[in-house]
Length: 305
Figure: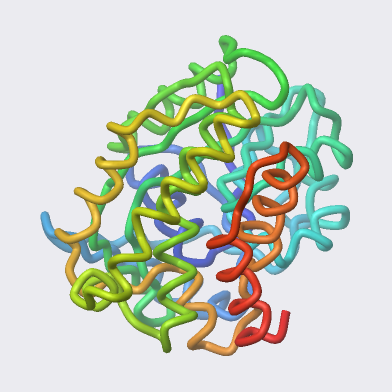
């Protein structure tokens, strides 16, 4: 039974999922940094197409030591902050704690498994469009979205289904998979072109990417290249999945992908976790990646990675 949840940490994604879970009746404790005082004083506000909801009070803390052991940890930090997990995770664990990384890119499960043991670790892929529009305020463009959930290094078990049921109770659409690595490569089909081109082409939203024929013409070839790399690594990436990623992009309109939000705010971008690690793994498998290599080079240059 999952009776306590920790969100590490309360950025856009963590605040959104944490608020959803709390509004559905779960006890949720948020690790917060810049928004700590706001969360304690005013709570969280969710603005979605079906209305505005507010979570108050919010259990917000400055350290994981203050939060203490919980049944479920949702890691929603940017992968660029993963060095801090060795300090952040231990105070949250008891002998049955499940740790779910909802981070972008490749390699996050392996890193967390090295810290807490692979038997604790699950991974989730979030298909949602949510931005933090002000301290303590979130705006959803494509919500509640969907989550693909699996276990690290093994097929999904009873624990995975329990976490999935909890998230479903908060209104999420869940897909449980036995091959988490395959799901990660599928998620990159959208993340690599849209997050990358948004930055490399001058800081533009998804509608502008699709509205410029020259830029839009790079999207599908990049998707096809990532799909080919996934297949070279034994992952199934159906053509229908690629088309679905193209189909879901126009409806949110002028959406700023999370990497673009970080870039425009002057924060470190997850260049290595999303583009660099994908390129290295693909090349190691013998997959030619000229477009990804070029985009990775542009991103390293513009972000000074």
